Image 1 (spheres, rainbow, N blue to C red):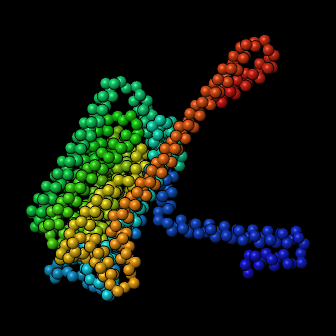
Image 2 (cartoon, helix red, strand yellow; image 1 turned 180 degrees about the vertical axis):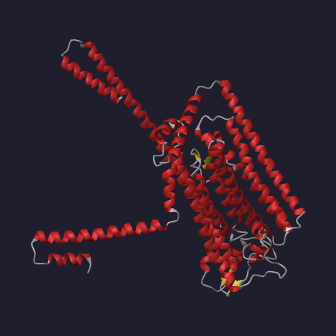
Image 3 (spheres, rainbow, N blue to C red; image 1 turned 135 degrees about the horizontal axis):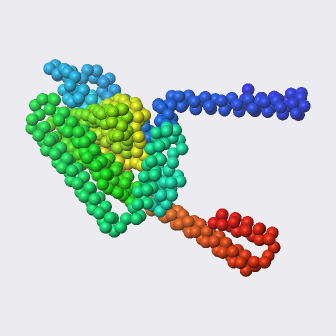
Length: 584
């Protein structure tokens, strides 16, 4: 019986009006309680099934939102890789395994164990890399060319949309806080994280806040010669760091050429990823020495310097650009199945980056904490640098995003990597101090290299002897072949019309670009209007303060002009003046 029918049945009972109201109240109360308890049960079950929910609350309660942001970002990337692995394995790998159960491995090739580090040898002939997939049609229905192209393309588009929304949300939340006019007042009154309960974390935050405010107060007292000296130090530091990054990129390029000349054994392929990971580990330690001599006038400038230079962003961008150039221009011309060779190189970079992250966490964080707390207490406890750790995650995920075309199952390595890294960083975070000034920079770095490499891939010629796109001029040509097949006697003429009149039309992209520009201009005008409104409100507050001071002066002058008044009125006037002064 429904709720309405039960209510009508109660109203038809031979009872008084008060008794019927009581029955209805009890029935409705029980119904609401059952629904409320059911909602609570669903929410509790959802939180219980959510990954690392209890650990996240524990980290946020002990160490605050800045340290929690690192683990939230790590979990976010883990979910990305799980989704990527499920999509690639479901739409690309499983159809191939169903049609061909055993990989085409030569009889003289066997698994030796070194493949776990090099990614070559036995793995070269499996579905791990691009060369392990064919351009055949599975079951005369499932086209592997279209499946490979659209799976990678749709995944990249979805990742791009998710990243754009995430970056916009992060920018909207954090850019408002970075107000150069009221930065010190905001930092003093609103920057404290009241969720922190760990005593050591509270003490460290208090020291960081005191030092930051004292440095800003000292910056306002600098003379012209001292400011010029600081600018000279900044220029020298940036010049030295830029030259060092360019030199490292050039050395990596020549090292790749040397490895190509002496490419005789599988173990020699580990030289380039070892050197790249070693540079990414050592050079930021050298960059951190610059912070001892530099002084920034605002926290935003300090954050940019730490993220771009000390966070190793520019150095890693240079190294990735050099490697992409070498792969697309040298490797693509020398090897018949160059996509698999690039996939092996990216596999080695991901593996060695993981090993160096583990070693850096153990020796640089855990052992430093043991030495600083038990052997040499003067060294103190090392910091859990949120910005550096976040940028390490972004670099790792960038390698996986670049390599997803060459090695579709590379996200499986990332899943295992992030899962182990989460627990390792959780243990290290419990014994470290915290650097909280750079926790807001997360998902907006290292995204452009991924899209640049994808654009280059669409313009390069695929291998002629392996892979799903063999024999085509470029990767996008598979769509043209598909449209040619649909132009025959079929019921998909609307797909062909959309392809020729929308996707291949310059007018369509011009209109889309024009609409986007108009939307951006509208939002820009809305932002300017809100900024003007904020300026007017601030000016109104200032004017109201001036009005209160004017009224206070008038009351004081009136009191002086009538000195022989009633003591009771004098007392009331003093109280009134005190209230006005308090409001001012």
